[in-house]
Amino acid sequence: MRIDHAYKGLTDASVVLFDDGMCDGPTLQVGEQYLMYTRRVGSGDIPSRGCTRSTHVKYADEDLKFLNGLPDARPVSSIFGRVVVRTDDYRGNDQPLAGAQVEISGTAGTYNTMTDGDGRYWFENLQPETYRVAAASNGFRMMLFGMQKPSAKVEPRGCAAVNMIMRRTWHGRIAGRVVRSNGEPAPAGIDLTLIQLEKREGKEQSNFLFGSGASTNDQGEYSFDEVAPGRYKVVMNMYRFPTGNFPYPTIYWPGSRNEAAAIAIEVTDAAVAQLYDFSLPPEPKSVRVSGLVIGPDGRPANGVQVYITALPDNNVAMNDENRPQTDAEGRFSFTALEGWEYRLRAIQSGSRSFHSGDMHFTLKDSQPSLTLVCDRPGRFDNDPVELRRQNKPEK
Image (cartoon, rainbow, N blue to C red; front, side):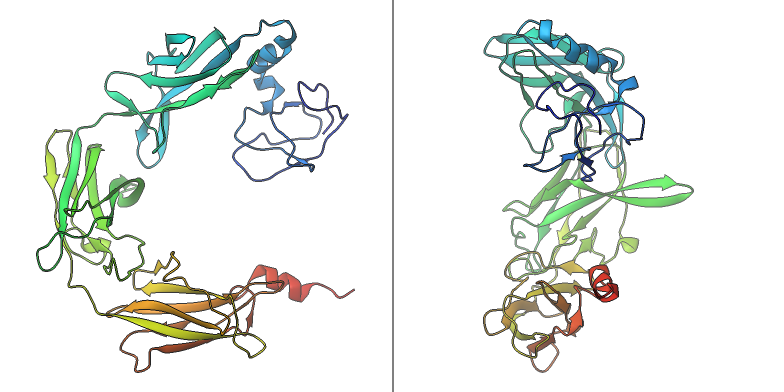
């Protein structure tokens, strides 16, 4: 790309840009001019994407006015952005929020403004420093996604964009208690997920709201707060591999093993908790199972990853205890629970990868000792990397 004007950091007449696939960015076309916010990665080329304001120049009037005025500008700063309302917990569907109160605070003082009809706000002539930024509107709250309120550090003659997402403060609440088969509270840390039901094209569709999860406390209690009006299902232990500490299957309220048999919950905007309890099945017997991995050379393979899936829920082991690697003698072990079927596969990575066939195992099998042979090229069958290797012409 030819450089017509560099505002900071470049003296070259042209640069090579590459698409790193990160966030959005303008679709670059030959003969068109663009305003690019980017940086060099190490000493290499420069990405054309990234979470920036890069855009075609015909959409960059506001940015160009600011950048071209920097040489004559006073050494003060600006903070601007947009406030939107998230109207759908699953799809987002963000809409501008007009009339929201926006406040920034720093050592120099606290400043307030309101968003315009398009949800935009702007603070000018600020002293360079770090400011805390917050938005408020009656009946709404900021969505922080588990983080603190946003902040912005502005340099002399610099600016910062801080966009904020608001959500209506609903009063609906789904809560309950999870108890063991002996009536005692379930352990803390059992995950529960809310499923939003909606009609689309005449059919009811399930949307898993993974960003709105809940977990049991030490009394086995859970709670989904500020639930929007609608129809929902609740599922416990979704995608969680059963372990000795949490030996439980996926269960849909009130006690089914599949979603089709689950009962829908109707939520209104009333400030009354709706209680839905779960009863856990008896905790199954557990056994430590050992195994051996043989490499493509016919010898025990060291450092091979063994992937374990619990069926029929297809929950994949994600921790060290139940996602083992082989030791120097090619051996591995994991905790198996009675009542589950397991699917195991070994993958040996390196300059060339090999994998084993899938092995299915239950504790009903007479010998809890397994052997996996990594004799198949690639990380899995029809691995495109291996296919390219096989089809690469010899020099």
